[in-house]
Image (cartoon, rainbow, N blue to C red; front, side, top):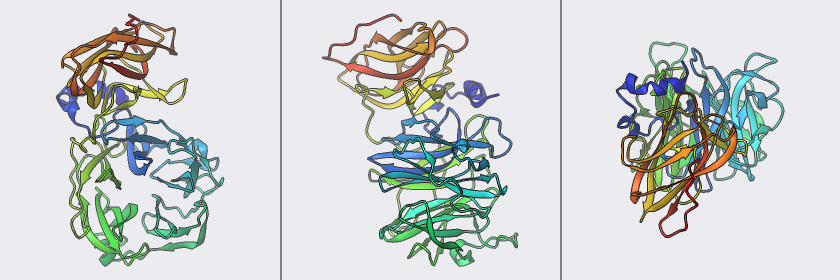
Length: 461
C-alpha cells in the first residue's frame, strides 16, 4: 500500500486526520516520506533539503533528494527533486543525508552515495545557480571517499569552509574557496568522553557520537549537534571555542522518542526565531525506514545552551499570514491529505492524483475585508470534479464551490473561476475535492480576487 493510500485511510487508522488532527502541522511534508532535514536560509526564505524514503521501504532505500521552502514556517512549497543518484555517473545507490550551502553566488549540495567502482560510501558535491536547482555534478567524482557518511558544511566568519562527516568516526577537511576541492588530508576529530559524552556497553563506540553531525556558529560559540547512541538514537550536542575544538559535551537536545530508530538534526535561525528540524516516523505507515521531517521552534539559554526539545504534532508557529490575492502554488500547503505532487508541464510542480475526499490545508490565510472570487489553474483527462473552499476545517463553512470539467489531458491546463462569499479575516483555508471515482483533476496554482476589484468571469468548467 502506498503512502498516499495510507493517508487516505488515516481517519480509520488514527481516529481521523480530518478535520481535527489535520490542524497539526508536523510532519511538514505528507505527500511522501522524507528524512535527514538540512535547512538553508536564503533571500528571506527557508529552503529545506531532504532525502526521500521510498514507500514500503525495509531498508534505507533512497534514490533522490528533495527541496521544500517556506516564508512562514508552516506552509511549505514542494520544489520536487532537483538532484538524484542519476546526477552522479559514478554513484550506485543510497542517496543519504546531505547538506546545501550558499557561496560565490552558487549553491553547493554535499551528499553521500555508494561509489560504483569501490562499493564504499563517498561524498559528492553538486552545484546550482538557484537554491531549487537543477543541480549538476560539480567534479565528476567523489570529493572524499573513506566509506563514511553524513556530510555537514560550515563557512566560518573568516571565509574558511569546513566539511565534517562520519559514522563511526568523525572527520573534517578544510574546503578551498571554490567549495569543490580541499587542502590537506581528511583528519579525524578525537572522540573523547569529555567532548562527546560517554557510552556504555559498546567497547567499539566509547562515546555517544554516532552520526549526522550538524555544525554552526552562534554568538562566537561553535556547535556540533549530532545523532547519539544508536539504536534508537537521540540528538545531543557539543560546543567549542573554535571550529576544530576542543569540543565539550553539553547534553541532550531531543531525547529518544517517536517511531523511527534514527534521527537527524538541522538547526537554523530565521526571522528572529530559532528552529530545530528532525525526522520521525509519524505519518501512517511510517517507521525507521519510512520517515518524515518535522520542525520545532526553540530559544537558547542565556549561556548559549540548547534546551531539551520534544517532538510535537503542533510544529512551529506561523510567521505572519499568507496572501491569497497573489498567485499561490497548489503545492504550497501546511497539510496535504491523499494527494501527490508531480512536475508540471510549464515548470515547477502541481498537485495531482486527487481523489474524492482529498484536501489541502493552507494555514493562516489573510482574506482581510473579503474575497469575491477564486480562480484555479486545473487540468483533467477525466470528468473532473469540484473544489470546495472551506474555512477552518474540512467540515467548515463553504465560501465557494468551483466546478472542474475535463480539459482533455492531465497537463492540459485551463482556468476555473467561482464566486466567493463570506471569506473575511484570517482563517485556515481548506481546498476539499469531491467527485466520482478515480483521479479527478490536477491543480497548478490559484488566487482569490479581493473585494473592490473586478473579478474574472465566473465559469462552470
